[in-house]
Image (tube, rainbow, N blue to C red; front, side, top):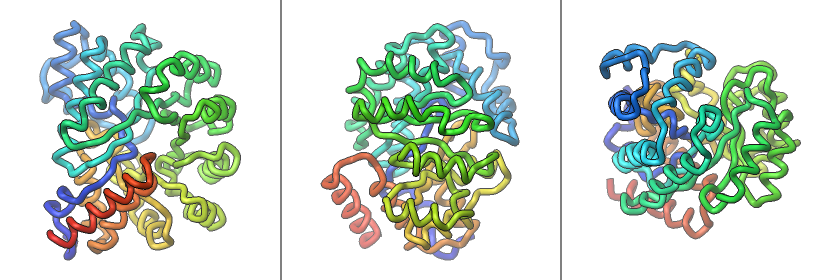
Length: 338
């Protein structure tokens, strides 16, 4: 166990979560409740059976479980309830600001309207300040679908542009390079949206994919992306341009059996704005404080390193400089008084 840090300290530490898939917060009890309400046969009848089904050892095997689970989400109220359940948990995790991914194509392709999805989620984030949390939505495109489908989704989404802050790219990276979606991201930027893309760990052509997102597409952030340590020029680029990396150590450990802690610490030591997040906490049984604690424990991190990860989370978030400074002062006050 780390000599320098406690879970209690980490839970109370003010932090932002920047890599969180709302559909990945579908806990077994809510999944079962919604399945029964919407009369969806999920193949399991108890919470224990659902938990037992969460077995995976790679990104594809995880996605094979992840997407069918979404069938229980049918009505606006379901999306609202899912997001509110996460936000209530986020309060207990010390999260003060959250920028949350959602995957509209996973719902529209099964007959749920975009309006239903975005209105349900947005109603929850509109109420998050009552919990002491500010929050925003990031609409993700599924990279294993076509670029044309992504463009259609963007066009469908733009009338609701006041309800989300940026666009992202997730799902299976194999054979789906960032360049496939360059045009739709260019259109999103022109519409005033922020840009982020997943560069999943240990994928084929991972360094070339990272190069594409930062040099060609010019994203504001990278999700995962810790393979960047393999190319010092790219590390120097993200440091110089203040591009944040949203790493997820516990989910890394599930899909490639490596938390990437050495890489995270190496980037942190070089002054890169790397952050720690929970990704899909219902599936990986780890929320953000658990991720930070697991990382700090396994790699014997100092309090200063953990505090810097928390500061980075606000510094690369998409909030105003004034808000960033307020949260950074909140961290300093917390550490001083703990």
